[in-house]
Image (cartoon, one colour):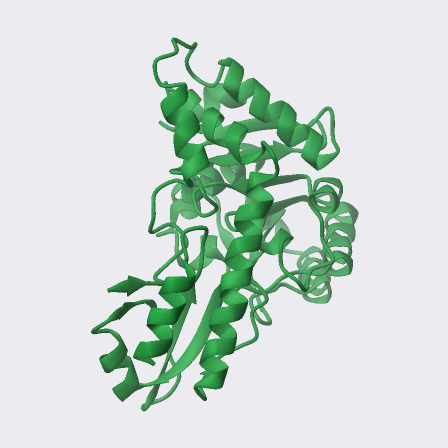
Length: 341
């Protein structure tokens, strides 16, 4: 069986794993206070172009979304997201579990529009009864989106402008950020994101690490006693080195970018492969997630030899499935897929 199920089906990139092994017997302070965590923080600050950025490490995406949102919102506030946003659809109510409502807005190809955000906020504050409603305190976006699509720099600027007008935090979920940054069709850099967003995270779990996400607070706005809040939520890792060593490796010799570039190259070749075979796409994705429309009879046949993800039913005879590439996708994988197709 060959697998395109997701971008975290393999372990760690060999260079990341090598650094974990090399540092394994070192005795280091816990809870992210070791020299590798600090080295990784410094390298991330440099990559972001923000020497005073506050960087903290957590272990997974849902955990990161839950902690960032719940520590930055006041108890009467909620978070706005596209209806297809990960926190609204695929996180099992984790945000609501903290007592904060997810306020879903319309989406187009997975993206929120600044005009829709502005319209919602104008309507909210024009309502004389809004004191009885959940106040919008943050906007959550993901880049790439759940559909593998990307915001342009102007779209991010426009959303940020609305957020600033209404004194709201702009939070970017960067679980797959490496693939967005290395897309052939993006005009957004890591420095742009650090400048535009109030807080974002650099995903490691889906971009070459065993686990780990690096949260970047860009405006000196890390919540007070943040580590205390992380521990209170059961998320403070005693062996914080586990994440620090990995991000130190990912941000050495541009490894994070190389991983993203490889996955994009494999995705483009996979896309061309399906086109040559006459398959249609659900949408055009410029990143490592590709959404293919399969006839149900082909779906059944392919599942016998290839692992991929169900996405949604298109109609009675067709199903949308997702193929994802990563650092571990090989030319041999694509050749095997082509022969099966």
